[in-house]
Amino acid sequence: MTSGLRRTVTLTLTILCLAAPASFAQNTPTTSAETAKHLEHVEAGLLPAVIVKGDPHPGHSLQQRMEQLHVPGVSIAVIHHGAIEWAQGFGVVSLGGAPVTADTLFQAGSISKPVAALAALKLVQEGKLSLDTNINTELRSWKLPDAPEAKGKPVTLRELLTHTGGTTVHGFPGYASDAPVPTLVQVLNGEKPANTPAIRIATEPGTKWSYSGGGITIMQQMMIDTSNQPFPKLLHDMVLAPIGMTHSTYEQPLPAKLKPLAATPYQADGKPVPGGAHTYPEMAAAGLWTTASDLARYAIEVQRSLHGEANHVLSKETTRQMLIPSLGSWGLGVRVGGATTHPYFTHGGDDAGFEAIFVAYEEGGDGAVVMTNVQGGSLLAAEVVRSIAAEYGWPDFQPFIRTAVSVDSKIIADYVGTYQLDPERSLVFTLEDGNLVGQATGLPKVTLTPESPSEFFLPDNDTEIEFFKDAQGKVSYLVMHQKNAPDRKAMRK
Image (cartoon, rainbow, N blue to C red; front, side, top):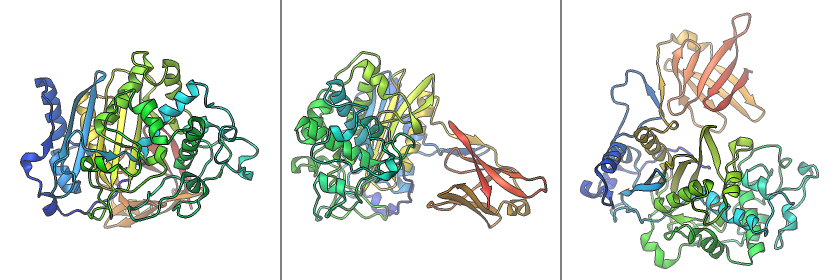
């Protein structure tokens, strides 16, 4: 997800406060004084994406932000020096209900993908699947139809894992508890009762990065066809059990015996998801139930396998191949970021009423997992990750320090207009109450802050917009600057 949607949540603070402050933090294990200090600093030091110089109070506590953003429950696990240093729940599993603990189950959303990728790569290691063979030679129950857009090229498992196969369907909404659930083949074909279109080829394989949960669902069918096992059993036997993810399952819906351990999902409007958690037959793409601690165990397994220290699932060589970035900075099932000298792997997750994120460094054994039970919880999760990054001295995920200046509204008015970013997306700027307000295609408006007469920054990420004039002094284009990404130019229409 990728995930990472940032939406405003509107739970009432009054109801949220039914959880007694004394029970806010739960399940803190016995820790050293140093670890206790780390935990205290992380909990007290949540940070925004952008800090303006001179702001005397940029940070907030976790409890403050949970109340402000109306997030019922959060589970956090921190990895330090190759081990889980601490894992803890905050808030409640449901409004007025029991506290979140380190053992509370959450839906992982798209974080299901990198865990499922381990099993797919294990099958490759065993010679039962191939990374670079036409997937239709390994699919038995269903075949991916050819399309003119493919230009005669086959789709491969490598391309499905790196989101470069040209396949459709970004993500899946899941199925309410009272709705009929389709078979996997019905999902692949977009046949009722499936609630998403057929998964097909839309662009030439291997030429473009385009996130596709549909592609991972094809991978799920490949794994079932190859192993002749139900997907939850396959993942349990090949991945979850070997690396100690004892509180995790791909079973959909969640078995009745595990429901008392699960957090209640909430919508962005503050109401519980009707009927509870959705069911996801697209298990590889969105069906994992897990805990923050178990996802931390996944990350640690990858870190250690990369160095040949614990290869319970993949060999050192396969793990290294998994973490080589291709188009879109995507490895085999995970996004790879950071400096080439100190890279990290990461993924976000978003199911109905659940949002989460994990990040882990390839070297040094650090990382973190944050899981929430509300739509929009990724905003809080990002702030928690920034607090962890600051406390543990990570080179990434730190707030951006900006300097705000005052610019006359007459100058700002020169930038009003539409700028074409690419054939499908534009940036529209308006002047509102003396401020420059921008809106990208399909996204909400955002107020920009000037740092010079021609440069502006966004309040919640690393994006900077710089405007340029032509020889006649008329604003003709802009350049979008982002860290770890090439500059992007947009011409004024």
